Image (cartoon, rainbow, N blue to C red):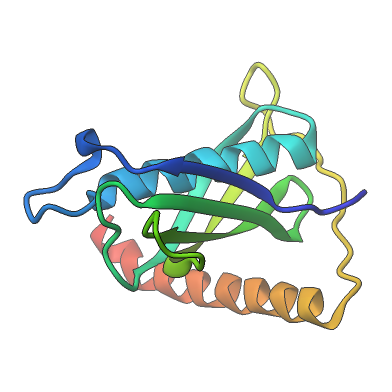
Length: 155
């Protein structure tokens, strides 16, 4: 199975504005979830739900009226889970190049109509970059386990 990135492009709108005049972080998070969902359902061939969003890193604000590009790609699969790398870029309409504005990893699980987990096709990295991405996802899984253990007394 080919692992092509899912890419959304659009212009940020005035309805996306926060109190500081830039795109609201919640809008960016919505775009991340939408692109991740499109990627996960395309990969699995089934309805998929978000089970984890971690380490969202906002590098720079996105300005209203900029072209936004959201790229989502599978970087690791478990039995039913898909780890999706999401990068958000933007550029001024008058500039040719996009700048990275946000990055995160989002985990989806494929489910049936009753919410029961379904198996997903295995992703096998082929290039050196893909192998590094898979190792990145595995390291983050280990860190999430540590974080969850720390959080247990407070849940």
